[in-house]
Length: 106
Image 1 (cartoon, rainbow, N blue to C red):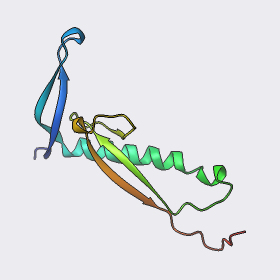
Image 2 (image 1 turned 180 degrees about the horizontal axis):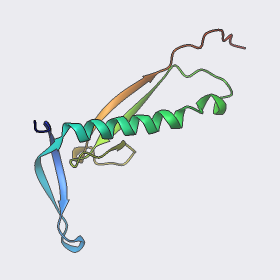
Image 3 (image 1 turned 180 degrees about the vertical axis):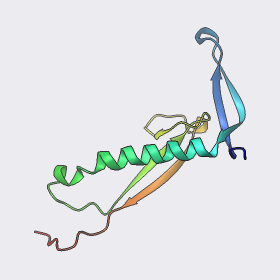
């Protein structure tokens, strides 16, 4: 059984640095690879956020919205500011944190 692919629309830089050209079009990316890259990015983000309680002095964070960028090669990462949105797809993820049991706000 062959790995399924998903279409990603965007541009890819091709050629030597002095003659770089963007190729617009449709690119096929392995669903398995994309799934693994999304899972890895979410795992890293969750790990980074696990210390949020220490930084916020115990304040509860109800949810965090994070936008992941998906590049035409299937790379997944945080979407920062100043990025050309036309070159990347994005996926907004809302992480919701359940209320802690037995915690009384002070």
